[in-house]
Length: 409
Image (cartoon, rainbow, N blue to C red; front, side, top):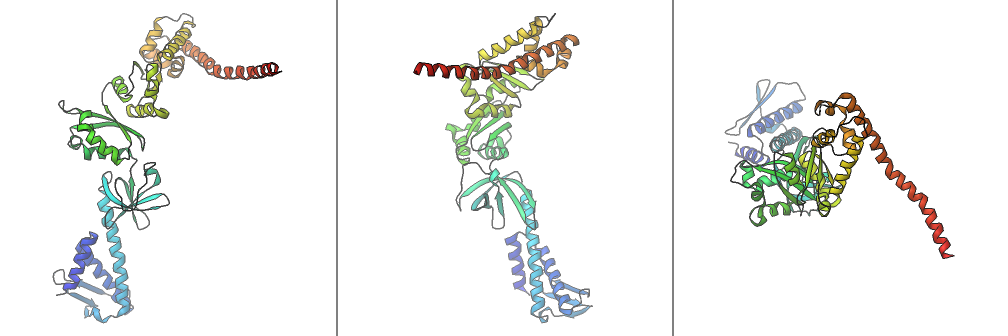
């Protein structure tokens, strides 16, 4: 029995996760190539068979048995090269088949090195993952040998290589981390209904419970914040807001803007716009640093959110009222109807157009066109105001400088 051959095949199959039968087939094909090259007859009838139990090799050329050991060094080298190529191809196929099934899941690996900004991560003995700069959390650096968790974003074959693309910035990375840290999510008791993220800075996650006895926010935070702390630590301190999901858009928007407290919300379904009124002291909290809080809340809820103070809101209503009253034969009830559909400024009225006024508010087509025209004129006037103020300031500046010069004299 050729035990050495069987042992080698077993080791290759185990180490490279390749089916043993395919290795035997590749060996037979490699030996056929070597024999044909030895005899100089590429089209000759050569057959090689390896017994899967004993490992014995039998070879025939034109139905005459030949001894493969007598072929010499050059055919043996040919067989070796063919075998290496086939094993590499099989290994690529094996790696691709393994990781393409794990696409969209979290994998752990150890950092190897950086190459032109791309982070190379060793996923196992056979495969490396590539994390482009854009998929890395901004501000985080990793040392060789460090263990990290990543999302398998994509798996593709490029130039005889399996390229496993990794990510730590994709929103699904947060989803999978919650699935690992919160058993209720893994068991589908709690659902992540929406998620908005600015990687490295802040994430908002809207959760809902399918069991009335389970508090979705409390379950995600964990006892004394233990669960959310593990996720935050994995992300290098990225802030995470857990938002309670609600089917009511008004309630959801109010929840999404927390920790700011909302006074009033007007929804305009025609424009997909939510006008949110907050007190003056809550304004900076609602908007957030560099507009981050309101921006993430808008992405989480799917609404274009406009934050106003009570004075700004009332000013918009007053201008809208004046604009409507300037139109001949316009009824006062039109103002209430417009506010009811979320139109609270002349800019909103201009953007909405005539169709909703006719179809939803039952306003006469002629009157609707007059209202939109008036709103357009008022919008132009409002747009010109900042320009006019700037021109006035430029005109006043030389006079002030002249007066200062006279005072010095």
